[in-house]
Amino acid sequence: MRHREAEQDREVAALLSAMAFMEIRHLAAEAKRLPADQPPDKILERIRTLADLCHNLPHATRPRRWLPSRRGTTPSTREQALTRRPMSWTWNTAGPQARAWMLSHIEARHPHWTPPPPIPQRRSTPPTLNLRQEAAALLGRWPVRAPAGEQPLPPTAHVLKALDTGTVCALHEEAAQLRLGLGTGGPWLRRHLHPDGVHYLVPDPASYYWPGRADGSGDAIRWWQCTALLRMYDGEQVSSMVAVMPETFTALPRNLPRHRQARLVHLARATERDTYLWGRDHKAICGPATCGHTPEPAGT
Image (cartoon, rainbow, N blue to C red; front, side):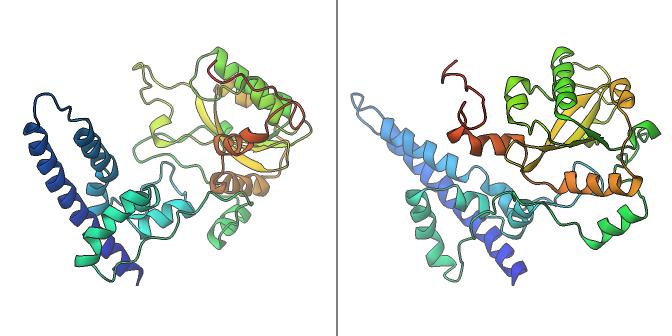
């Protein structure tokens, strides 16, 4: 059933792409025929709307296989849903008029097609590890592995460390001072982390941030991209990323049993909500009376 739904989505995506191209071609010809004193604004807006709606559809006709940025990670519920139904993104981000346009073309040629369900929200509840991950943690197998063709991280990086809030903020401040590009938290982060919370940090670079590869300026990456599992002031655990210099991470104390470290790495990787999503949802109530933070005025 799922395979058939995915195949129908690909057929529908191809159909809608063709219909959009045909309509855009017709609209472009219509714009040329307008009198000189009549602006083509409405036609151009219609062309823009069709282009915005359908620009992702060619990818939906032949969706690429999901490739993790880190070896050993599994796709999130959101990524799984988008893989099962290639039309999910286009359908769920379209408004009523755009959906009506799509259905006007779909119903005649694919009468049995059903719209994709809503895209799952990233879970705010703690993730559950599968049996393979639990077994690997019990056996002490370290989850972070080098991309093909790259040297593994040194043994000093194969450690997950528990940190207090002050240390987490200090690491973000160092990343900002050194302009490493990941981890500029500032006062916002300090106000929203649990003041007495225990946080976790592990070197876990994505393949494109693997040490030794070129950074944006052409220099070799000399820092470690670390995954952080942070406890926010409301008790929720979220993931985050911060760039940490190897010597800074090595100097942090080791304080957890090995099997618990491995299990926490899997949990941090499987945590779907990050500080951005948490902050987005918190924004409406952010203020001195709730979290102690005073947001900057809009437009500053």
